[in-house]
Length: 628
Ligand code: S6P
Image (cartoon, helix red, strand yellow):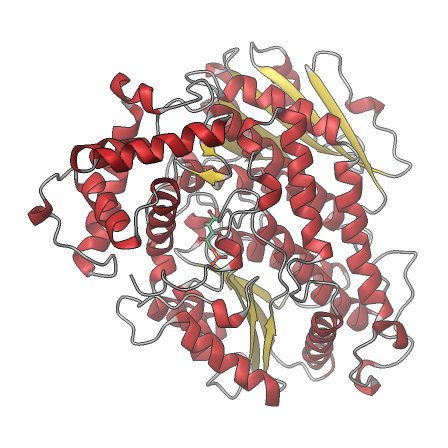
């Protein structure tokens, strides 16, 4: 498969800090995630990181350009728009950030001008849908629609792996429009961006992104924001560090621009830039520029938030343990309840479990006070699409509350600045506390706010994280949201690790529902079996199609149209297959407690065995050695 023979993208490498995360206890898991998240701020492998002067300079120029566009909207009544776009988690962060920044504009009497796009539309906000990620023409079409009637569009295409064709299609469109600024955000060197052929398209992501990179050297309408933050703690799981870095970078650039526009400091303690943005020269040493310092201080606020979260590692680990005690039960569930941005972050975290760990739709759920109302999403109330989209607390009360058992964990997410919390949340929480479910409380506390009213001794575990920074512009819980994202990622990842869905630091129960995930699966097989790429791919196809006979597996590349739909269906079939684990596989697994044989990897091993016993023995030996 083209592209697989090349050096792997940083975002698809295995992180050496987490290689044994599957053998760690809850606290050990959180500590390893702390080390991996540190790379977000510290950088990795000699590449420029978020604090590198080269990256800071680009962020600063981008924030100046944004501030100028926002000012034109204010002074000249122009219709400039800022569009964040991405697939999966990148699209979800795009949604959360555009929602927040529009609320800030509205609070200060300005017209909202931030938009988001997510491959597959709003349904992908909470149900993963990877196939539209592979569609560049659809990406371009979605962008054209949102740009209609605008004077200027600043397009920010987010693809953590520099790998999403949907975003490539949009960048390819935007960089050839005179009224668009193109920004590419991702966490690999452009030279390592994905180069695999794309169905229905004559370009690769790399060709498009390299063209943008060249343009960015000469034009102020093209930007590449690609600090390197190291491999993900679970290989390829860009919802983790990739999503967090996206949130940090969008906040750093666009909150700074909003500060310039509004003449209001992001935090009361911050000073406004000393000079007008237009007068600022390009600087590569931020300490020389008084204008740059508020932006850098903002970055530091995120960094301190990270540190504060992991100073509560013990508390995070105890919530993880509580969640895992339910998830490890045969029909256990983890349910997040919250309000506003914090509630929405619960929805997002839960939505990512299906593709990453191959779990059922009911296993991880999020509910938010008010449901879709006030969530700032384009398509409004999505609850008509089915049960999974019924996300309000009332819907929780009718759909889930009556069925809660002691195998369920309900985690209440609170912000202490919501003095009493939304009344409905309070009522529902009381009902949950009276149910057989295990209840946990997580409070993101603002400095100086009392939280006693939230504490209740019926919670099995209650954790309070007091943050040095909480709001931006007095109301939007930007830093509390970032802190919560880190904690929820740790809890849900940890619960899946303890359930046995991670081997070493690989997700081994992923759903093979698009090209990128298919490629990742091949890489996992190569790694554990020592097979070459072709053999690994062939074995995987046979496992998917349940075909032992080579002649029946003629589809050689997932970009073939038939295979796209076929293997999507097959992967669904595979998920159901994976639930019925057969006991004869047990001998291949060294730590069956932790890895309950529900993964396609082990099904693949069975298929492999029938044609190459030696390889299975070698793979088994490897598994056993690494388990020691
Ligand atoms: C990753 C998540 C995926 C990705 C999506 C986009 O943990 O499950 O949904 O967000 O594939 O990836 P990228 O690299 O284009 O941002």
